[in-house]
Length: 286
Image (tube, rainbow, N blue to C red; front, side, top):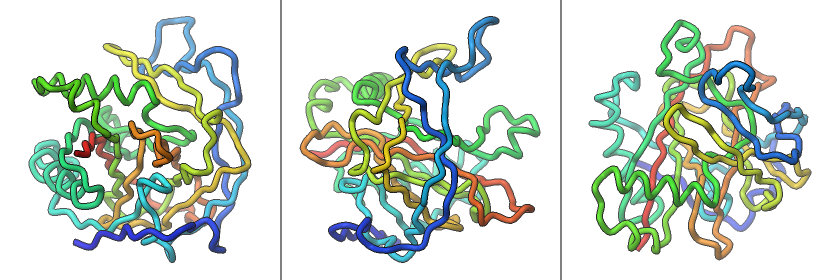
């Protein structure tokens, strides 16, 4: 297994080919954004935020794919073959993919303990056919956790596993890292990731994500011309992205790497719908 995670000083400084595409940003608002994950009661909107599209350059990072780090830019590209034969088999995901991912994260990050707590499959075609366990690609700039909800979710997941030294664990440095992988070659709706160093704290807007049984908190993102966007076109099933969604470190380490799916202008009209899986993980450092 080859882990392509070597770091250079600044991939941003290198001229790269790019596409221009529209990314959807939150328009600044007074009230707290609220998004429902289900159809809310009558009279309540599914979401109260308004969004604007910004046409931006998205850099093709293929030729510098080894230069990114989850602790500097907030994301990393890796070649990561899996032994999973069917990513739509829940048992195989947990029996085969979870252990693979746990070892991968230890190898790449130097973390000493990894807890995989969630996964999401995305396939718009299957969703439209009635498979409600599948979701479609998200096409709004966002980050999955906030400075607050990173701790809240970690505490919840550790407690659910009967771990009794939660406070001790949460006093260590820990991160929430997503592993995003295509199930088939990506022909449309690729993922783009924003260099964490180009995001100002004021660009991140905490919003409620309402489930039927709980309320989470995520970051929506407002536009800033400093944002630097990267993607890896035509990603293959033996490739993956590591995306930093939270880090308890406040020493300049990348904490939040905003990301979104987007409409790639180079995609063919008959392109196959994107199929992908993402794991959400807690990584603890000694």
